[in-house]
Image 1 (cartoon, rainbow, N blue to C red):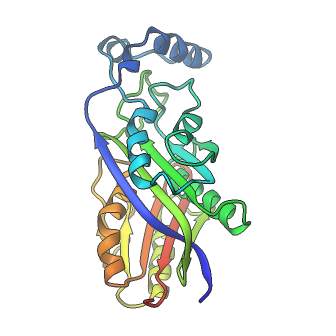
Image 2: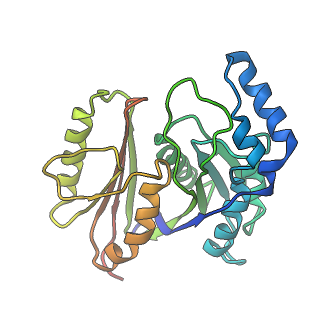
Image 3: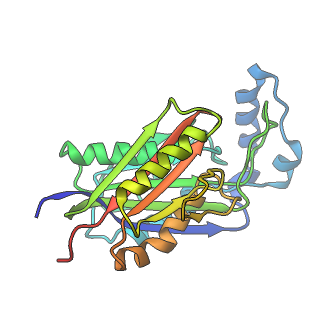
Length: 272
């Protein structure tokens, strides 16, 4: 049986409270320097109160749980949309020290909710070229934005991290597709999701992000509140059961601001 990159583990963790780094006076200096050219005001109330969570603290323990000491990672890709409470630090490098091996560490941001799928595409590319046997994707979001944005943005209700482990699995077929030419109305996005779900066959499990409407499709809708990690947290909860039932799986998200439709499909191989 042929082997291909597959998704072996998906773990999620929520956190309350804040990191002590949220009270670091250097945070105010750093954010002020970033927003000054754009004339954006700081959120002095949040800076004074100390609000927000560092992604290294949020994800390090989850990484250790996802990978044992005898399971080295070759590539680690961190993806986020809302900024870290420690924005000047190379968090992906710090996280690479929280798992076995010496993985190449990368970070990906500024792609909206499509960033999680883009990170997974990159991880799979590393595997398919033979560079990496085991690739890890770390997704994170935290609740605080320490300046007023130029336009409204949706922040998460809670701090959250998700770890996805990609390894070679016999007979599994994992694909990630992204279309950046989708209509901002979302109508063409819904039609493409419906088409891809039909191609998976009867019994496919479909998981849709909170903002994606696909009328007439039997699907699990992710509640609003976690714009970047919510879809993947729901996958962590449901994938074991779907795998036990040997159901093909489809995940879909549409970022209307960027006009990007992202779809993940997962077909399990025949029972060993």
